[in-house]
Image (cartoon, rainbow, N blue to C red):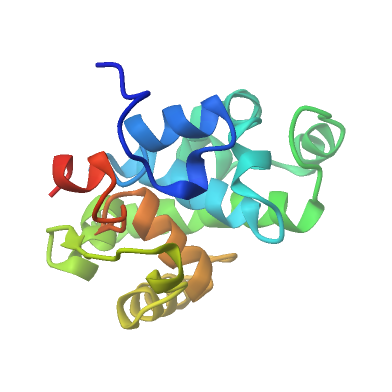
Length: 192
């Protein structure tokens, strides 16, 4: 990827090089893979009450701990696997969030068994196309929307946990359903 050091970026990413890399290469890029969307929704739920920085720094550890976020494998985790995860110092050892991740894997598998592809389930919220917003400052960017409310409710109807509207709005931004890069950020036009 080209050098983006001198380009204008969203102010939230400026503190750490890893944040800038995430901003420049991933945040807001439309994710069309069901498994990658599943990974993102699990990580965003795990972030609840924490900073994204905390999770981003442990993302590779989560990929190892959660079998690369394979829902088929995760849906079969038993009590011994839960204990193993609770003793894994490389991830956030929160029993409620770990059990929610397993539950969400089971819900994902249930959708598949109903012939509902997760990527289509997620993207139908925005009729398959990213919504391009035109915010000039961070204070303009909302923490939820009618669409995040709708997707949150649909996920809850299918049994998903840690999918409140604020978590889902952040998920929608990161997964590219919304382009919420500020208008003067170089990524706004690149992703529009």
